[in-house]
Length: 426
Image (cartoon, rainbow, N blue to C red):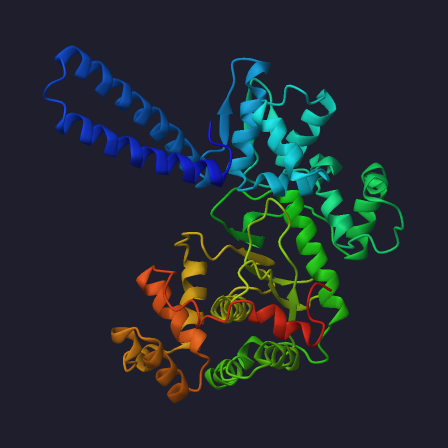
């Protein structure tokens, strides 16, 4: 079984080598006895077939399409835990962070199929992956119907401790895990927030994987706490997000502190801009939500620290706030912008962001959409008053080629700019 991306890349490379070997062997082996030729060819084909099956399984797990894992007995549990981790889109490092142990320990567990793991450790891994195991194992793909069913053990307590979620706790990570039954509820009370699963019309999740709901709840609560610390002084009115207002926001992009200016600009409009990295098991780029006290929030994880991603994701979340987050509508919308989600809500937010950043009538006149040179991108950006990353990002998305314009997309710039005003991570 392929258990990580490194093995996946190696397997794909091995298939290529074996296919080349097979092609050479069959084209230059006229002197070999037919029976020997057949045996050797079938051997190579068998190796290729086995590797392709493992690659196909890994692709299917990572796609988020697989949520159920059949088992014939307890001896299948280790493989189920590995498959469930991949299906959650959690790396071995993510799972280690979730449990408060080293990535290398997870690698050892999986390499030996958890033979040295205690029953307690197996239970901790199953809880971290949020799987229910009966005659078969099932990934939870919706929040539990009863909030009491959300076990404290499903929360990434070690990672929450590491990030300072438990403000008044002075102990160690190990002590935090032991005190989790008190710390986790206290954390949610601080956010004035309870993970009481609501009907699906209250929350929407755009994801290329199956998110871990306890971790998602903890992240949302943390974002709400940070929003309270940066509560805007003015009330938010969706009608105020006019084309002129949006144009004013986008024209902050060329400034060397454009990220900071954007935060102030949103603050003046009654929107809190929050940066908080996603927790293990929740591949997110951002979210739009209303905090329990009613603060509109655009939250970004900076999973990709690039200016093109920052401006597109920011405008995408602003689009959700303008169009979808309201009383009686969505309370929160979570976004993995890499996910292929054709829902009307996400399509609207994508169009909103694209038109706000670079309206279609302006885009049609851009020379860079045809020539695709750095000089053309820079010229179009200067003419339109935009950061070149916005145009470079548009070209990369439409071409589906993210190797283009690597020097223009502002890699590392978002954190650098945000750090100037202590906007990062609370």
